Image (cartoon, rainbow, N blue to C red; front, side, top):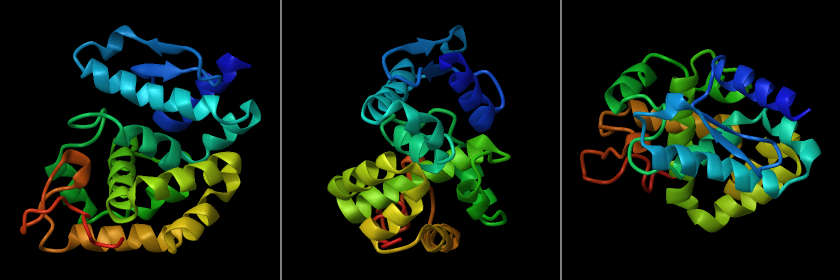
Length: 201
């Protein structure tokens, strides 16, 4: 059972072997030799976030959260220090945002380009934290993890905006001339603020 869930997570999210993985119980983290050369503390902090998530919800809800990678992977990505694990370089991400729709990264459990989607998820949650603070994020997490199919409804209840509208507003902001770099890579706007700060999206 544990192996099948781990394999499913890898297939759904990555389609390849991961650098590290947390078992669904949240009690064991495997770090593979492939993680060598990456920021080891970032790998561990990412997986520790998954461990805390898994330990604080029932085992039957773990596979259901696989259908919500914009939450489970995005929130785990936010806790990584520096440039985020597997995220795209800021210039490449912004260039693609100008021409590619972000919504498919949030509307499917199996995005075609994991790195692009992962960077978008981190940007999304950085913006939620900047505009709503960490208490709002924790309120959302509790509601979402207790009812994974209801994550989108929980987002609207906590932040006052449905998921699609929030993603569209973020894309509009990222495409604007004042945006210089994504918050996912620690960038700033022309006026010196981090991308997404105070934008209300």
